[in-house]
Length: 337
Image 1 (cartoon, helix red, strand yellow):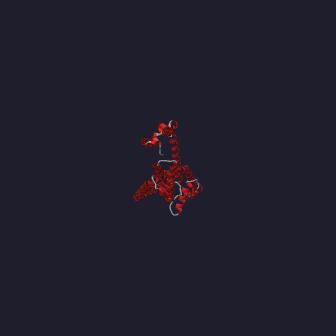
Image 2 (image 1 turned 90 degrees about the vertical axis):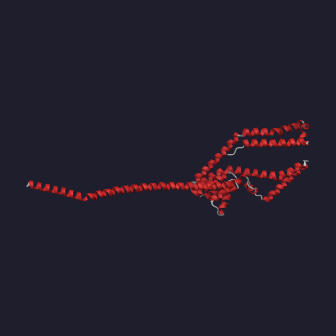
Image 3 (image 1 turned 90 degrees about the horizontal axis):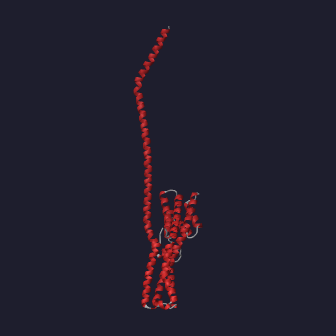
């Protein structure tokens, strides 16, 4: 009985092994093909991930290239505009100079005032008994030289006042943008609260925006009334940011630091060149000072210079050489930053 059960159990085990072997034989191809499919799926998934990663890299590279090209095109356009603006900055027409000097005077009124100044100067010299040639020269100087010198002086003075206040205005704009205000609202705030002439220049930007110009176009026009590189830098920053995007507050903050560093550099150069300027002033003032002392001590000795034609000729030559020397010394000690 026990042997019969053992034989039955062995038969069952052998049958199970045989059935498993037969099943393995019939299912081997299916299992192997499934493994192959799984391996292929893994390869495909890995390849797809690599392709997506490569595509993302290419898109980032193309985006950076497009942005770089946009900035390059913008800079090229700004360079062309700058060349056109430089003509008005270095040697603008008289009408533009009057506007840059902050003088609300028409050309007609300016010419009338210039003529009155020339004739008034000539009349004063006639009262002192000056030579007719000197009187004629004074008319030219008073009608042409002095008024234009005054306009250039007021223009330079206005630019200096603008550069004193402009970095502070940029800092206010940066703080306003970081606190959530739009750029246009920050500009209006400067136009209402800043000191002159910054307030007037930003008011012109607001007025230009009100007639339909964009912020970039309105700020780019600042150089027409404020002939300095700092105003041009401001217009370039706004135009680049409007076309290529970016952090405007950071860009304006960097511009403010650049302007303050330029101001420090100018002050340092002025301090270093003071010795040379003092030497040039002493050298330039010695001839007229010595002539005045000689005239006080011994007028008969020096009067032939003013009473004879030879003396007049020598004075003219001396004035020419003195002017040339002063001009050369000025160019040697005049540094632009």
